Length: 232
View 1 (cartoon, rainbow, N blue to C red):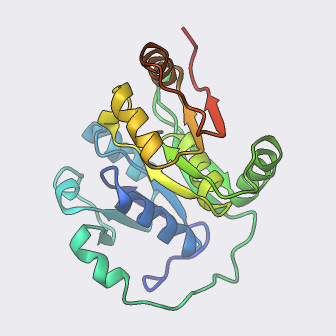
View 2 (spheres, rainbow, N blue to C red; view 1 turned 180 degrees about the vertical axis):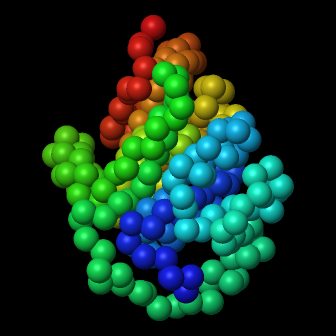
């Protein structure tokens, strides 16, 4: 907000998976702008193309990630852990009065499997519509602990964010190394009292196989969603 960010401005976020990722997204949305998720693991050429194509007004990143980014002629904000005191200095609650349903919430890029990646512009009204559908389909009326597994640059990430924080729930980030480690994944689900999780088939299949073999159960979970791929 201090930097003059306004509705429909894009702000690129290129950070490692962690709490800084969520801080960045919520900060951009609070400022009324649209976030553009960039995975630091992407090849440099892909990152350079996405940055140029989305024409962001600013970039949120981290020191270690910044070294791998192309030369940028735009403001940079570092979201490293030692910067959190700076973020906590403000205790006001600014409201962007000009923000409307027709403004952008985020821009997410396709895989580029048929050519170059294409930026898909998602407006707030689109999120509002799908949120209403989720509210009817899933038991979101009572706050739940949600496990967040999808990559930051995939559309499922925004679904995880809205279905949890948007309905008063808690979002628990799942480490990448835990996804295909059924004992570790089960331990995380149990210890964090996860009530809602959106799996891809490969992860859920491995987890259910381990649960069946060991005699454990998932009765503490209220909703299990599976999609984004073929069940084999």
